[in-house]
Length: 321
Image 1 (cartoon, rainbow, N blue to C red):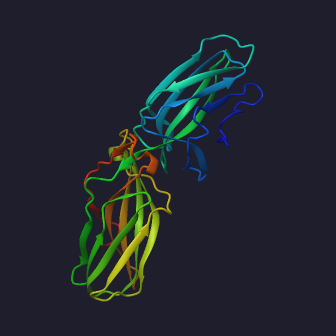
Image 2: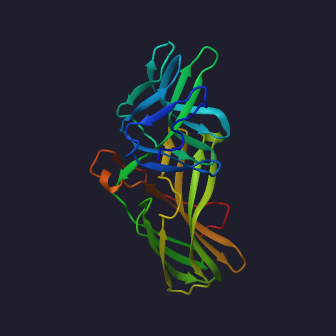
Image 3: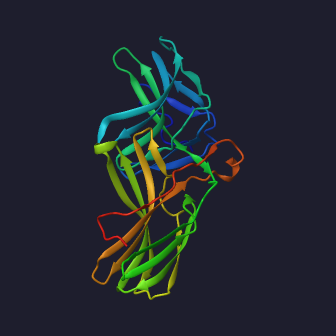
């Protein structure tokens, strides 16, 4: 069954069908929109061609661009187009019968992944424009793009010692610092000194969407996942294992300085709550990447994921351990 954007777009006045050449075999992917609704569109990778057929019964002239741009939700006019490919499918004139027009955008560069966040949206879409005397008819067809990556050459484990002087000393270790989106975070926490009464401990996966530059920078923080490590007081010498499965959460890959407009970063946040409800925590950045499907791993639709070394991040809003 074709996605809902194919066919019958302008009602009885001018019906347009846009069908991709490989619509029967091409996979679709879901994209959660800013209003919470989930849309399903055809899935593409970097370097793949976009080809198909436009059918319509009447027109004056038609253009078919393939725009790619990012939008900042705080200002709908703040749209940044990073590539725009255009195919003019027909010269001006009138049609007396139904016509179909083939189109193909060869080996299209798609440098970024489709993304919808709190304050920004990055889109890839086909736009059909029918130029008429009074007003143009325009229809957009969204595509979903995934950026694939291979296993990192270096994927060091994370080891840290944190604590409160003379009160608490903890060592924690995560098995690696870069995880694919279906991965499992495995770790262990060691209690070396415990002189405060801890009631609760949990591990959080934090997503930060950073938009803007300099003083206009805005950061949206979302707690994507919570993993209860313990409920009760630990004792000196105790160790607690951690296993957090990522597959069940709506995650994107880490995105850094996309078109110099926004970034999406992820952090592991270790939170402790004492008997007086005081919260202590420590954050550590990790990198998330999208693993290529099995049948694509031998093809050229993936790239090596490079990222700066992760650094621990401490917030001033809560006591540091």
